[in-house]
Length: 272
Image 1 (cartoon, helix red, strand yellow):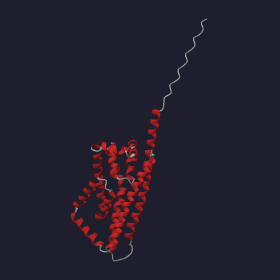
Image 2 (image 1 turned 90 degrees about the horizontal axis):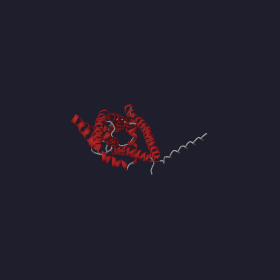
Image 3 (image 1 turned 180 degrees about the vertical axis):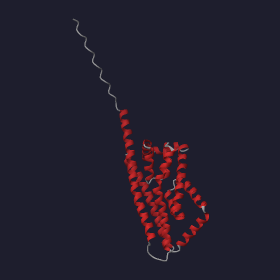
Image 4 (image 1 turned 120 degrees about the vertical axis):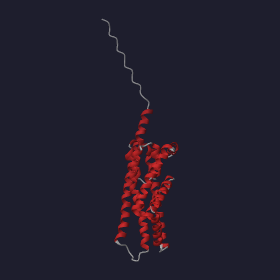
């Protein structure tokens, strides 16, 4: 039987691979677009003008799309990058975070009141997720925050936590730990948009503003990667401790109990 450490290691490795793949695909599309058309800056400007014309309805439509798509387990990183391209960093981050909280609340309600039995069945076949679920029950808020800092799909975590029955208040508070990932994803889209605008610029080379944008992105990636690694290690340790405690209890319950030796009867005193 696979150990908890091994199962969790594979789970997090797959999650990291999917995240890296999304960034690689995004980078390839950006490079291809820049190479294919020097007029890309005009297309970006046209999209920005169209979004500005839509006003609040453009952001509202994006948030609705974000909630529906992420609830269907579409990677939120794709949508967050798109927000950075369409709305810029500040508005894009705001739209993503509003969508994140609404989506998490919706997924929590779905899993707690409608999908609980189905999710429990799925967890039975996924020992890594089941180990995380058991660990969360021992320390709700801390483990939820750590989970949000890992590269696991946020919707998967929300469905699992809702089925676990954690309190909604701690569940919602832990969603603030998704901010670092949202920042890097939206920033990636924003930096890509800025790179597209650089194509149509008359002056060559990087200016100070360009350097700050790209250097900021690199620093953000490094910080989030370090935090995610620390969170991953903490989650694995917590899950392993819970499994060890459960095994110890099971061993004590199944061990044969020794019957106490009967006390010897006192010898009768001889009559005088």
